[in-house]
Length: 367
Ligand code: NAP
Image (cartoon, rainbow, N blue to C red; front, side, top):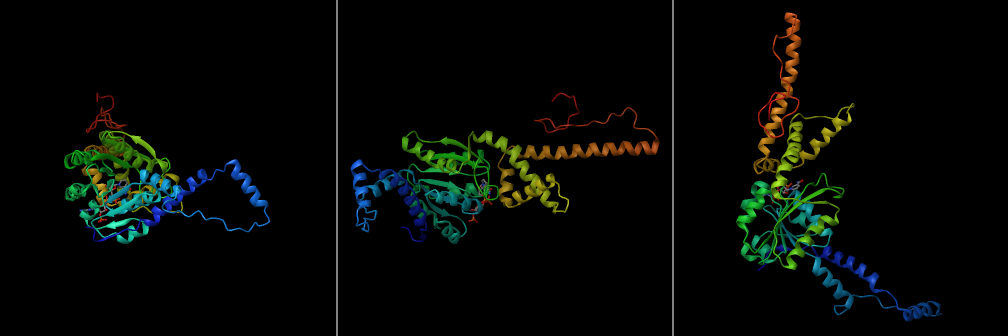
């Protein structure tokens, strides 16, 4: 029984039908030579003011039925679990592309859902009884496991597709494999952009995905492609890679970016009349990263096993840089005080941190 849902997706669905109808319209209205002849006669007729049939879409109309069939084959019922900042951002694209979107979240996001054209379903049992084709898990990384375990999975259709969009990948993959029954499909994804970096367009923005477990039937394969098409259609750069690979790359890129942004944020940088281009980049970085919740950043650290090493490397690099500066200062001071530099003491200079090591090595030392 569905008691407390408010379905607001009708306008989006209607516009999707209208869009496809316009497309079909172009194809359907090809005239035969005889029809052309009659049309010409009609145009030259003195009775040019005639009432013509309006192309009303009757339920028995062939065109309407074709449109419906086309829409049914590609339109997905997508449930978004976790309708916060990123969930709402994704929902806009899903609705825009004509999919039916159900939103579910811990907090009441009814108004936000309504304004986007999605249906807010507060009760997880009601949500699952709507039998979405796709369940998109969009909760904070740290709450994902408890949210997933709390869903009444038995109310879903047997071959539901589960997708996650978490910014770490091995963790949700393992949780999905542990918690979801074997007859559910699993697609792990990471849209590598957010409401700030993707606010104007998703063109060429990376979208990472790993088809972790997809049933062999054509319909299941088609459903995954159908879902991925949303991102292809928006112009994303589609990158298929394993969750493990993703996490290695992401720790060295995304985690470092977010950490640097958060360090700079603590410095409370301000715009000045003499901003250089480099400094403007730093201000942009702070703006880009400070919009994300701390839960997200903490999740990047806690649930990517490579993040700790990157944090240590960052710390070591900073220490090495300070050592280099203080070493030079020390030399200058010694010269001033004693008129000479330290004898026999070769100051170790660490130009670059070794790629894979957590201790400082002097130059030339085997790594
Ligand atoms: P977030 O802080 O990571 O997650 C917020 C969402 O998690 C909200 O929907 C919130 O629900 C839900 N949530 C938090 N704690 C919860 C709990 N204890 N129980 C149930 N639900 C809980 O911020 P976000 O930016 O919206 O990110 C959502 C997911 O998308 C994350 O996994 C993130 O890694 C991923 N992602 C984000 C971006 C981005 O740019 N923001 C980009 C790619 C991927 P309520 O709102 O109902 O409280």
